Amino acid sequence: MRKVTGSLLAAVALVALPHMAVAQRRASAGGGGVAKNEIGVDLGAAYSHYGSGCVTSCGSFEAGTPVDIRWGFMASGPLSFEPRFTLSYFTGLGGHNLSFTPDVNVLYRLGTASARRGAYLTGGLGLDWTNVGTSGTPSTSATQLSLNAGIGKRIPMESNAWRLEGFFKYNFANTSKGVPSHFDIGARVGMSFWR
Amino acid sequence: MRKLFGGMLLASLVVLAAAPAQAQRRATGNSMGGAEHELGVDLGAAYVKPNGVSGGLVILTPVDVRFGFVPRSGNLMWEPRGTLSISTVGGTTTYMITPSINVLYANSPGGHHRGMYLTGGAGLVLSDNGTNSGTQVQLGAGVGWRKPYGSGAWRYEVGFQWTSENTTLGVPSTIAIGGRIGISLWH
Image 1: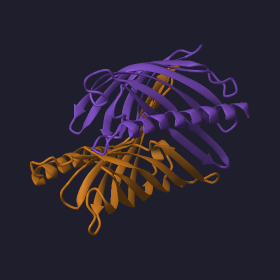
Image 2: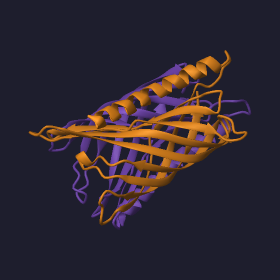
Image 3: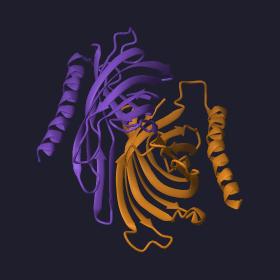
Image 4: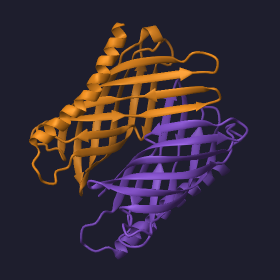
């Protein structure tokens, strides 16, 4: 029950935070043609290490693109919120496999940085929710909570910007579902567009 | 080795095909402002039917990265799309790389920023499952619409895609019928 409540709280936070960001932006924005969202895609690479009793091949390296969809909400203050997510659902051969990874990060601009250039710190909370089912057996779900932190920089390129970010992510174990804890250390490089 | 060269050749074609589009834009463009690229991400849904196996539904986001080269004039636009996934665990490396290039034909007054377009494309699926590696060819066609949304646009596309089989990988040919919906932003 505690885990269900924890997951629900996290999900509510993931949904509520972007709305708070929108409200903050509306309250602070002028009537001009100010960008509302920062949208981007990245190429990412990370070293992962599995814990929770892992004894062999506990490390792995992964790289790929697109990493996820990040949809940031612009704010006039130094803090802004950025939901990120992926979704994949496959069904066939009498079974299915669903994976949904919502995440929300807070970005804090450093020094003289603006929303379009300069360095920032970021931290966030995410979920990795999976549901797998095979023919003739009930489906099983598992949720893994994660926390991440990183430092990044936006480098303007004409009307958009390159964005570089180094990060550390810790994924908590879900022992009742047999999901081990693991951490990721990596970087993501991508492009940000504003609308 | 032949597959590797075949893959390299097609990958080169993907790169080369995008270059004339950029040259065309430079040749016809002036110093005034105007978008050069259209970047977008989508959510895709499709019915996928492998040959000899019952089909199923696939829903996925982000589908790929699409990076279009917007011409200053003309109805044709080149749009490379791709995904990359590499994983190394315990000394075994697996990967999947899917470069492709689409041509978008827009005959509407909105050009390449709004309205309907037709598209067709070709691509490769370069993969290694840790034991075997191989290449598959993809061909696709579709029709789409762009609907302005602020300085960007929503983009809807429905289409058909065929992927060749690869006996080395043990993968049958597949057809997919579906659509993708996403957002496009320009710079």
